[in-house]
Image (tube, rainbow, N blue to C red):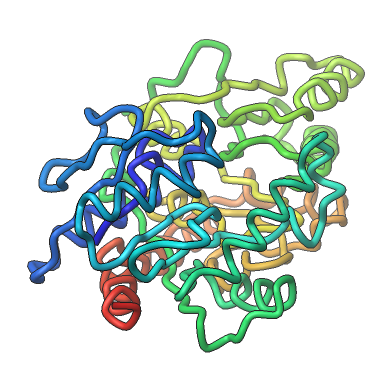
Length: 363
């Protein structure tokens, strides 16, 4: 099986986590499967146990790689199936193609992506989806959205929920060595900060909680992930409230630091308007961190009854939930226990077993 090797060094952390977790799960299955990374800018990031085919000549762009280089690499590697793990896939190939589509927010809500050439990206994603032999996605919600966006037969789509790495696990409270500028208690948001992540609602709700809910008076919001154009607005709200220290934008952090932040946070807040899955939800739950999340899209499907689920547009409800979690130890303990139980259902082995079946059916 040939997997697009560029995914291992993707600029999108979620894609890197997905492909690394999936391949690790596949290698653990002890099945008669040989995995080959097709191309990739940095062979050093390809996991041990995975073969590698260097990139053949192709036009010098991501589009050129996908349309020309990837099929050539697949032919050179003599693979049985190509897995394109991130939205784009060859529209012709010497073997069947499996494509992973994580969500279709860019297609259904293009107003969230006001980039000059976004129409080109949407067109290529659409063509990739329709050309692929099989599609893998990460939630039943996302499968329905793919059908709605692309008019694709639901029978071509398989749901393979994501897994959580073993490093996301509870640790002793004294292990809280947080970065400079982060002071407990704090709320945590993980993921690139897009408009659809709806973070202004959480900042407004946090300041409301600070005014009315006891121990929440010193609460702050810490974000992990690249700022895609909303960070200034969040900081402006904090400055206008007279507490600029209440919003801390960390950007990208190491895996070890991310795990520490989960363990030390009072809660993960996830007010997103749209998600195909929402990997930080299960990472937080696996770490024992209470989760307050939106009722939109795939989020209730992922969290089950292990989180406080709220209307993403109801700032008053968010303020109330934040205040309750900060001040109620019994509630935090209940969310911690239910979250750990829920997260245990999401493993990369399970993701790999479902995906391997897709490879076999495609081949």
